[in-house]
Image (cartoon, rainbow, N blue to C red; front, side):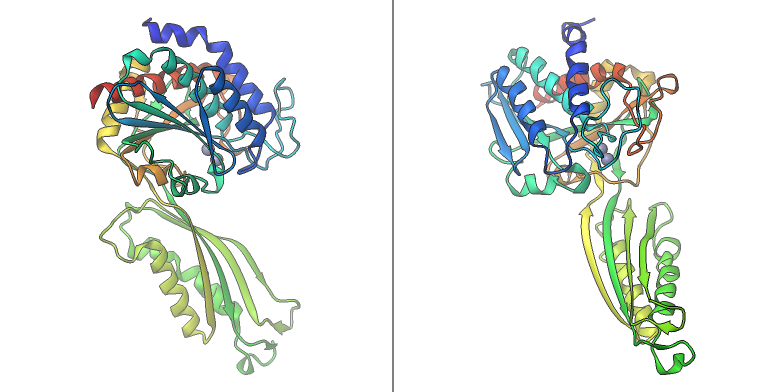
Length: 393
Ligand SMILES: [Zn+2]
Ligand SMILES: [Zn+2]
């Protein structure tokens, strides 16, 4: 065991205590007030000065005093509106209807202890490390921090992040180049027709048949317009129309999501523009008026090739060659993409699935839990990744 590993092993119970405390008192996005205070307290006890961003975000800087680049390490802070179903857990959520079901409790604990170990080892560093505790990951909070200048003063040269992943067995890590998580646009559509009697449809304009055709036709974006190797998932999650069986309604309201792994700068249309074109054309064909609102939630998360190499080199030491896998791409999204779109970044997936410990339950499930044995691996990855980045440049 090397000295860094040895130190992290000594801190194992501290990591677990931190994680369990965050787990017991989860808070929703942009309401992480107590969570932020705990993070500040821990960092200040280590001698860091901290600043707030977007109310509940916490940023701390480790400056080695020697010239060199700046690496940003990021953990997300928010929990989900889920009632925890892990009834025999001694550290089950005490905040009713709120749960750390996405492992962000583990992310914060790992990054805090990494900040401790890196502070103790700062004579091994050149340059700076920016520790960023980011609120509201589940609803694209990263962009707020970017707009408030998290990547400046000092300017960030590289960014690393990780997510615990229950679909990957404990002890393994997935590191992949290119697009690793999807983009997400949310659409809200009103299809407006002209109400009337269902016995006399020729005197009305039926928005229901137009809406039904939209739902069918937009699937052609995936099956006919895009390369089949660039998957897209278009789903309608909400439909609302009408009052009574014999009345043609005035309008149909629809909401849904467009998820894509598409990251082709040469495609001037992109999946969402193609989607809009089809909606508008179908509406026109059925003499309806179409109102579409698009909310761009997340852009695809793209890993930088050099940062992937650095992450793999680090993981060789932390996990060993045989435990590094390439699990490929996930179409769910993650707002870490806002950082990695602006500076070279890498986002890795830390396996925490263990059937015997019931930690192979999917993320966002009321029974989700983390195999705590992997937390030291996450800390070690943060620490050694930072040492490697600030040594190499
Ligand atoms: Zn999540
Ligand atoms: Zn998450």
